[in-house]
Length: 291
Image (cartoon, rainbow, N blue to C red; front, side, top):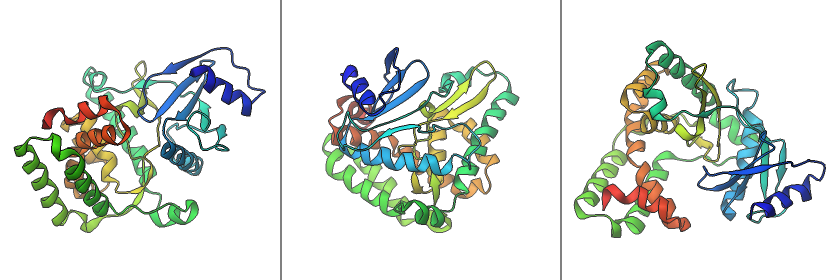
């Protein structure tokens, strides 16, 4: 299959000399190839992923001069044929490895840890400073209404996942959603551009210098609630590091309730993704604590 993908790159970019390539296994929605140890090519696995990748490419071009942290800069792209395996983007590989929780725990210096928090929050402050109204006009993006999105998610969870969830867990999920959706959490909400999947696998760092080296995978980017990005930090790194980040973010205390709620939905969202895309592993991983 990889040879087909390589062939499809060369059909569009015949002057690109490909000496070697290997598959990077990380990526729920895309096949990812590393070419010549210096280029990353992403091929969506599903049709709706192609629409998403095209939107992601537009967003990346839009924000590249606004954020100071390195992000993918698509220099190769092909959206001529809307077919998995043929549509792709390519960008220069950003050095670094994912900042997994184990790596963060391994950092013994509080100053270094704070330095990482400062870098992550600086990136989010820059990204979230992009007004939802402006970006909606410039990129013709749909505004996501966070409360509506959560209603839709709740509906899907009830319809598609409740048959697999034990009764007491169903009650807990229902209570959590209903309390949240009827509460006042959304009263001070500014819609901005968000990353949308701000977790450990998409945050790259250099263990030698203990600095963030880049942020990748903007597939979930769009207009939404800034709190959603912090839910990724809370989910990936735990309460202590999350609190460190919240203290650095302007009016962080105002969004923390929404952050905690969003984080509580992540496993169910993964199970839902599994059911909707026939990904057994994602389904099992997300549902395991609710069976």
